[in-house]
Image (tube, rainbow, N blue to C red; front, side, top):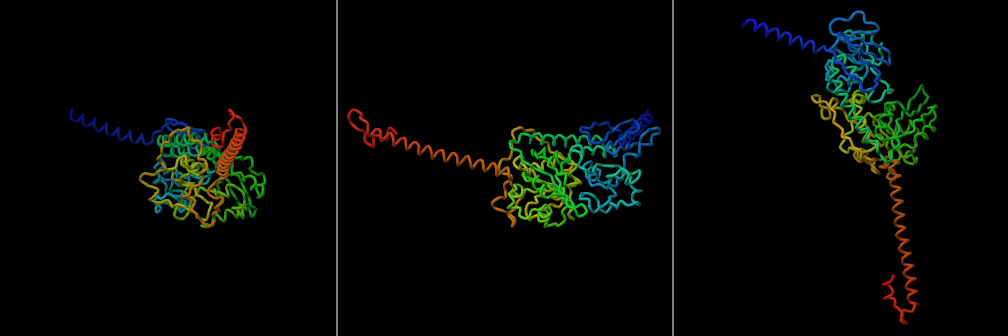
Length: 471
């Protein structure tokens, strides 16, 4: 009996170990909350990831590649252990999922901004290194033959649609449940902040813009892609993107199209670090911005998304920002409606309105590798009472007094000017009313006094002192 018990105990242990092994390769069925451009189909022996945008099907299996499955373009044994990346968003997804150690090769290792990566172990993703990785996440499904898997890199998807591709990446690690939980928290926070900003009484105008040089020909663009439009709308801003120009080379028409803006967010490739504000004014043709009469120029509300960088100056936004649309939305809200959450610390939004470029290098002081904020979501509280920040749209901590400052205009947006103008006008009206009423009463009183002086009350006149009691 003792032998049987021991055998039974050993068998249970073996089954338990086998269960763990099977658990590592289990296929968890999850649902998609948006229409991100991919689908996941689960079978007991494999799962199919279909990129419905690029029309590519990837088959994922645990033990042996299934036979007789039609329509699959590439097969991968999962979970993968070694990953190459050609797009920064892939690194961000791996970090958020807790699989940073799987990243062993990159197209440009020096451009990765995640300080938690072991740079000594990340190789350049050349033809030789491709053989040492299990999968390569790229912008092109054909970039690395049978090992390449496409991830979206353009802005045609909304912020949540793009972020939901974390589930697609997680499938290669059989980590769908973790990704589903994290994305649900991100989505809830994003939608909550979005809803909270839909009761703003006076919606500001904001545009996302870009300058480009097309073989020597300048191009001025109002960006109306789904990604940018969704973020601006979620922050309570409005704009007329129908003004996007057919002829993007016409500078005058472009300037007229955005002259009603209270804020602009720029994504031009600016290279003159330390002088990018001057570079921006030059590219967009504003030679005398403080005398232009344009509200966003007077208030200097020109912003970018590259405040958070590596020590070498590479923007962290494409790597982490696309993964956390809730935080990006909070950043933009903090610019447009600063009183909504005064305690929010901006990560990516950089003020370009003056001479100072206050970028922040990612380091141990603002990113804890043992408890990374990219995978931690703060719950948002629903509220319907927020109707806007009012006239105070400036941020003195972000906008230091510098040589470019125009004291007559800086620190207030066009929306601010309208509000302040209305308040001043109302005040003047009230003062004039009081003055007018005073003189009217004085005139009426004097007339009554004169009448009383000339009247006959019982044969006795009323003197001036007594008459004032009737005024």
